[in-house]
Length: 429
Ligand SMILES: [Zn+2]
Image 1 (cartoon, rainbow, N blue to C red):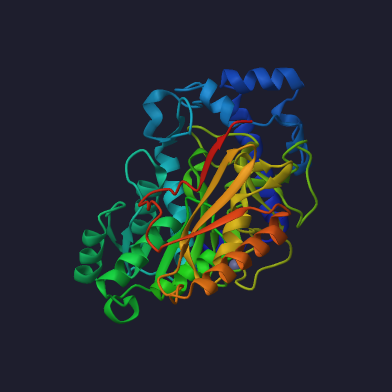
Image 2: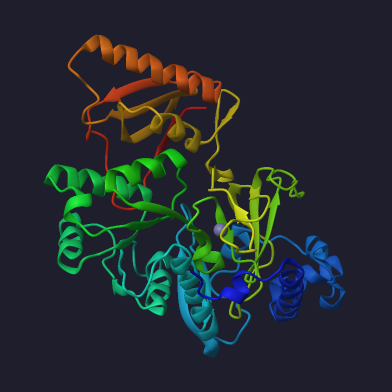
């Protein structure tokens, strides 16, 4: 099913031409923004000189630091009167990143979500429970507006209070939820403890899972635990929030809406483009925003383009799930390690539970604490030692570093109803 079939299936030459037109309009718009005007002067670039997608590379990158330095409204490209909404993204340190929406931007963001809903088979007959944080975070309102555009009944539940979430699901027949992977696990455990079988007792059939990177193995565990289809959702506040890219019904990679975003994958160290299909950092240019378009924004998210057409008929290219953030990379004994690699190994071992913690301390000692699954311990200590050795060996093979592994009882690690904190770094290096 399509929301905007013509645009979603536009042939490549037409899509390229539309991108070029919108890119030039965006550059012209950004000449009003002192930050970008300065950058254009530095490079000597004029909007009329942008004649192809390759000319995009002559434009400067924009970074998270640029957003913070221009906080609160240094990157605003319209007058304050034209701004309809503000969202922010809280960083781990310092000032948040602010993103402004004009009336048209609010509407466009909702359209892109509506495309995603239709693409995964959601219709106006569905009941959508949004279990993401409302407020300044885009995962609440942006998704909410998109669901309303489709005509779903929307339940703006927000995260947490699992008792209330369950009550809403039971009383109003929720069929689709939007949730973080860590809360999905927490909620699945909650249902299990309550003796609720979601297949039998609830009407749930789909979940949109995003806001944190997660692995294919995690997706399968959520699908099995809740008895639903999980669709991967990708977005970031700086580009609208959710809905930048989304799984189609084939669940074979996320389509990036290329009429709204120009997509590049670069080497994170050098900024140079990588070949099609090669992994690197995702760089996005918003070409259909009014209030605050950004040129070549360094997302820090690591992914790759999936070459070739998609069976669903959409022509907008697909990216793989995010495999990590270049900022999240840990260096342990000189080896580059992403928390996602550890998660992938843990989720592939059935006796291991869903919650884990990576602890770095002393002189580069890595300990992975991982919960046993509720049925993972049969009371025989010998089996526990075998399992521990298996986890150590599989992690060593994946990471090329041998971590310590501590198996802990199911439910003994801190749980979270928001974004999970997986790494604690107390090294004295
Ligand atoms: Zn597709």
